[in-house]
Image 1 (cartoon, rainbow, N blue to C red):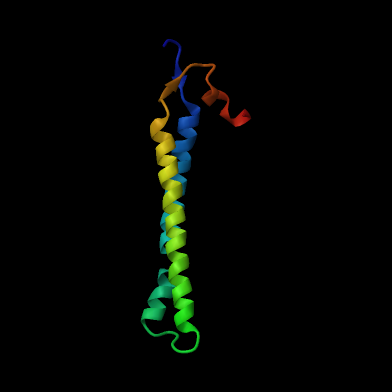
Image 2 (cartoon, helix red, strand yellow; image 1 turned 180 degrees about the vertical axis):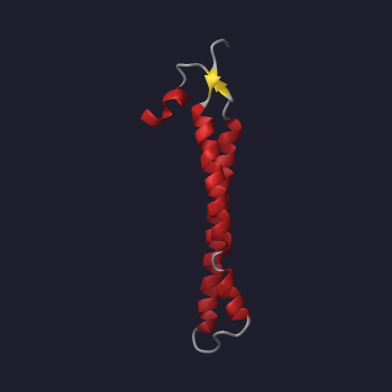
Length: 96
């Protein structure tokens, strides 16, 4: 192929991937302080056990969703060529 140009779609996905990785890390640890407080006995009795179960489940779900987003973007990025023809859809992807 001749006349290939850098793939702007791949570049955009790469930038998004960096941002999403940061957010995924934040999401993965967002409930850690609350879990530590529970482990230290901050709330016992009553509905605390049910709340902790929900808190743990929500933390697991949030981490799973964040990890899935990162995995999906990594997959997209890996499949994209570094360079494309000037008329390729990746050049005009924002207009699609």
